[in-house]
Length: 116
Image (cartoon, rainbow, N blue to C red; front, side):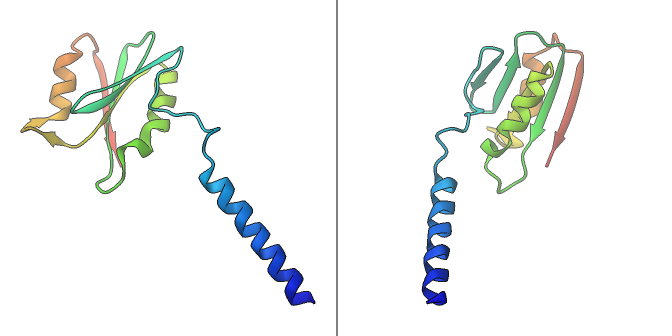
């Protein structure tokens, strides 16, 4: 009898865990624009632009990790007033992604570059 109850409870917990794991409808999408952050993309990067910014961050993801996995981090930094860029790769079409970004945003004087 104890074995049956244990099995039923285990299956219930497993099913409950699986349903929570795959039910992501309540999670915000950090690749979508909000009232305060504009999210755009092109061939080279995702850009997270707050309404007002004076500093920029370029972030290179770890190889083998989906770039979208870093969207929440960069969205949060954009909330702090940084325009943030999530590079899709180091070099695309023989162009360094950081060079593409820096040449497009020459109005920003303070830049930070990092990665995982």
